[in-house]
Length: 618
Image 1: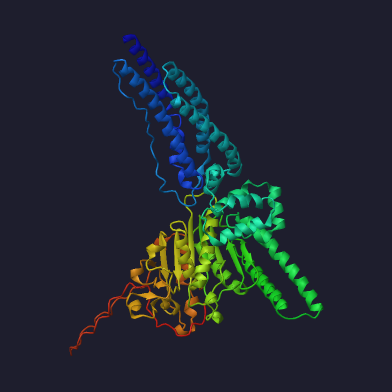
Image 2: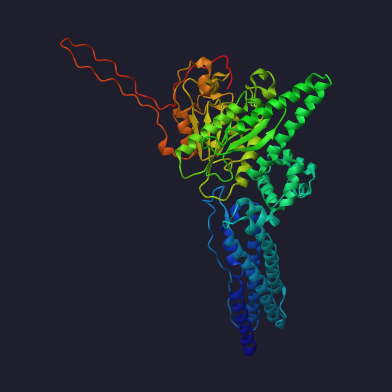
């Protein structure tokens, strides 16, 4: 019996050494993923599978050893159950911004470690199987060890082929979050919306697939769609890319997540082609003596094309960054997004969302605002790249359509329809941006555009933007700033802007007492919880509504503060004016009553004018 126990103890010793050599085979890969699963996409699922294999490996060796210990005890010997659990330090994902990237070298090391585990573990499984077979013990633990090795080899092979694409794309050695999530770990990414199938079909030039992708984009239910689009595009060959741009420039230019330079190329191609085609069609119809709605619609599109072309010419003037045509939709009210500066390379990005009355034929005025804000922000910071854009990607309410629910300024219908579009657009800004740890994305909502911005922020809790700014806001669809789930929420209101006071208007006494308006609580009040910046009062009477459009006035305090906010230069904000009480006059020989001191200044952002009964527009 003693000889039998001794032999069993020898087997236990050999299995223990084998476990010590192999139970940590997946630890370095797991350690890497604990710091990388934050990228999303397929990374969390891969990390979960890796953890499962690692635990299975350790339990397999423990099960084998426990079987041997049981045999020793049956033979009258003594032995304790060993534990082969290893621990790894888990790094928190906190601190990784939405624009941060993944280190390609670290991923390369992880793949190498997986490949080594794939070679090492099957050999360990064979040795363990031999030991267990000699004792007529179940071979299941050995199969689990071999299975972990097979899994590691399969993952290493798949990830290495994907790494080749990442290494070609990323000269800096850092992969974008999108490339890591859906490029490197794309094989593990869930796809509930079926976007991957549509992307595969779109790569062949199938226009219905591109249309299907745009339908998914409009719904904004999949926050990963733009990242998937970005990775899909970057993995296409250059000839395929060129073919898609040539065949469907209008569809391609609308896809969030594509590089801004590609969207600009596609949309400008579409703009030029439409102008040529429309002029030709107008000439043909005119020669035939045609008139009516068809002619008017063609002329409307020509007016829209002219407005967009004039807006694009604002780029590149007097040292200003060039303009990029990011989105374009002709007809009806029209839609567009124009950026001064490439947002994919910018350190500070601001997206301005206009309000009531905005339409494509009048985009030049809004583009001037975006261009002026670029000038101011660029002047305020010397070592950062700035991108300032106008986003008119929704059908804004129109004053003449107040009685139509879809376009009424008095209802949130247009905001609820436009918010998903804005949320998807910011998804695209995140997806197409180069990796960076110090990138700031601001969304600036004016008037009704602030309501669109507020609703959109709630579509992407914690991922919409780094900060939002509301100016001239009638309400943002929230009772408190914290409901927006954005780090920084700022409000500015001109003292003679009557639109901001709509937030005080409520048809019920209870609503008035609670500070509620038709679109949530007034964001300029203290209980809303936003931070306030100073906007000076213009000399225009309130009823003219000029104060409502004064936020971008050249060299104004408001514009300067907007520039500082875009750059995160909060310490440079021009403060609210302070008022000191008049000095008490020196008493004369005939005493008089001392003057009544001036009331103490309040910290509210601005005096409150009475709301105007007849708004005139934004």
